[in-house]
Length: 84
Image (cartoon, rainbow, N blue to C red; front, side, top):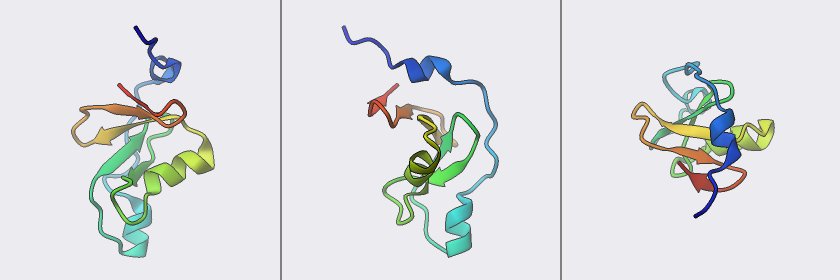
């Protein structure tokens, strides 16, 4: 049995900062789906979107875990490339 990623247990309850991807709004880009950083609440677009702003946020900050929003059906750890 694989041990669960430790980053999932380090997360805390956080509120999303915006309802949409601010970067896509500024660049007038379409959004496929949204992801929220569980460290700071930043909302970015998914990797199926042109901007890939959620992943760019991880690359810039190192914040490891994000979740799908508004339906919180799964979480993703960028470091371990693992779903929860």
